[in-house]
Image (cartoon, rainbow, N blue to C red; front, top):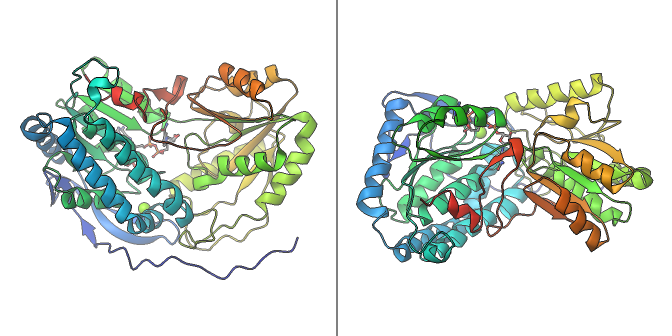
Length: 477
Ligand code: NAP
Ligand code: MG
């Protein structure tokens, strides 16, 4: 097939000033860790060190929780909602104003294409703050009683796949409801959270309302286990989610868990095939497939299997993989070597178990962490690649004959976060959606997010909802 040659179109990085090292953001200031160490954050597309960040120890986490408690009691909880709203609107506006800088920083630290950080992550981050700013003075009309109270100090732990967006999902509703927070970003992507700390300073947010403690899993555990944390909000793997559920069992802490997924993307024979192919590609290759709600299991009706697969392969051959900061890039770098190893291991297991991999011809850069977009055909429900979350650009393709079979296969998973349905018939979409055990069901689209829409899982995908009016509930007593 003839291919276009694209000239490089790299986004300039001069807009982002990265310091050589960062402290912890506690009580409105950057401070050195007292009992922690130092870790490095790298650019996964080049393996270059971007900055050193502090690794908070238990005494640092304790200082952050005390700062959050003090700010809660002194200023944030007593403040009228309409005043809190002003701060949230201010933060939202600053994020919008600084969105290019934040998008470049996010792509540098995470490896995601600039096209996505610029056009998806950052607009959603700002939208989330705008949305919850609007609730701050209307909580008495949200359906939780006439005068709902905040919970107190929230300990929040987030993953690396959407660093700033996950921060927004956690911090915006917590603050709108009058809580203060201690947030731990992921070890591999701490830089945008530290930039957010600077934005809190720029917005004159009262010191201690937001505290950012960088670190690894042990720092997260210290946040979760701190006795003066009233509410734990976690997004990450089901495995760590289980540990957290155990750690808070028997305490008075409230918990919400947003965990993994293995979503079915179901294509019926009456679906518009070209449109479905776009949705399949978006469903599994958006953000290198590092998406908890990724459409990682494609269920295709047998009668359109050949046509759809041919079309999907043609489309995949046009995907451009490489420099995340190039505006033409569709697929960026895998976030870390650890994650790359996980993807490779599961893909090898897929082959060993008898499924057939296919990738378009593509050259991967020499340095950095890369994995070619891959589909596996000949996958059965017993295969591990059909059951376990790969969290990478790898799609497992299965087939079905009848709608009942599609529903049974879609629901045959320990997860239940999201699903997709492709069909020309509205009645079929509604009937099938009703029978899917998934928190979000997209129809003739995929991976669409809106701050007004609740998001969350069934079964091992966790409990509690983020986003929308539902997202307030976890932060109100
Ligand atoms: P992870 O290992 O569970 O890590 C998530 C966060 O928890 C990180 O900040 C991590 O720190 C921290 N952590 C690790 N061990 C901990 C412990 N014992 N106690 C407290 N915190 C701890 O998950 P991941 O591999 O980074 O992220 C991928 C997973 O997140 C996938 O399974 C994906 O489906 C899920 N996810 C879910 C959603 C959702 O909304 N449902 C959204 C995005 C991602 P370190 O960074 O230092 O390891
Ligand atoms: Mg990094």
